[in-house]
Amino acid sequence: MRNILVLIGIIVFVAVLISFVLQFLRNSKQKQFMYLLQNNEFDTLYKKIDSFYTKSIFPEYNREYVRLNALIMQDRKEEIDATFDKLIPMAKDKNAKIDILDKAFGYYVYDENQEKCDQIIKEIEKLDDEKMLKYANMMYDIMILKKSNHIKELEKDFDKQPVMQRATNAYLLSVQYKNKGNEEKAQYYENVSKSLVEGSKG
Image (cartoon, rainbow, N blue to C red; front, side, top):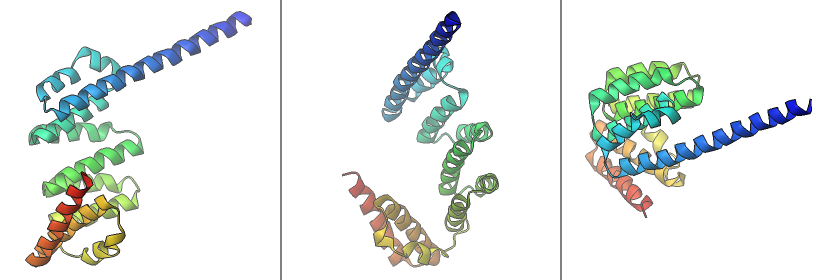
């Protein structure tokens, strides 16, 4: 009995040690990825992502997610489409699905790609997340359908909102006033958005 307990203790210790070492290696590699992204060293990054070492410590989803960020920075549209098409079905738990669908919708709505936005909204509808769906539909109205029906909603309590939310909402108000043909208001909110973004950079 004592030998079995000792063996179990050793197995648990080894498992914890392996987990610790693996996490250390992943953290180190993630810092390297971040450095390469920040310095636009994309060719080196892609080689690192596809290396045997990286494949041995990271699941495919994580590697492709890093690749996606680099592709977006390079605006490589066909490869971005292919990577989103690959990642969306790979995301299994709800948090992962919310993350990748939010990223995909944000990318395509600002690119004004109605076909892709339609596809992603159908996926969002499956999540049973009313807040996310409501925001996606608002963005769709403003950016794709060129409506101006969310002005009152976004102007309400505008000055009480957190800085980055105000910056985003100011941009969306600018677009809506432009959709409405009110260039003066559109320019005002565009300037507000830029000012808030610049101010947040310190």
